[in-house]
Image (cartoon, rainbow, N blue to C red; front, side, top):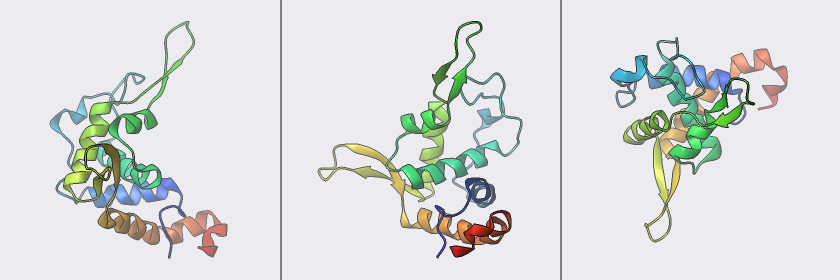
Length: 156
């Protein structure tokens, strides 16, 4: 069985973003068309469906790196900030975008908070069985395109 670990990320994210667009809990807020995705960016994204692409990327990263929280997720989507004549520094992406997407994926039932045994400390978000099944289903559906691009993947 092919998992989302076996298929290139760009193929998984493209197909997953199309599937997340049909999930009613995952929806771009009204401010999504005018917001920058971090302080290292000069302009807002030009793609109309960037919210669903980012949601798909966040869901995949939760699967690969979970448990992960909003702060670490924002760092994953950061980049170098241009500081003029001074050297560039690494900055995090928008924590609000990461937090809102994680909240939407939680309400959709795809991720859940991982708590300690006492239930007092939140360690971050992890995939639910439904989220894992969705990612693996997407990976299975794009496997043929992945094999066409990378023939060595036929072993999976």
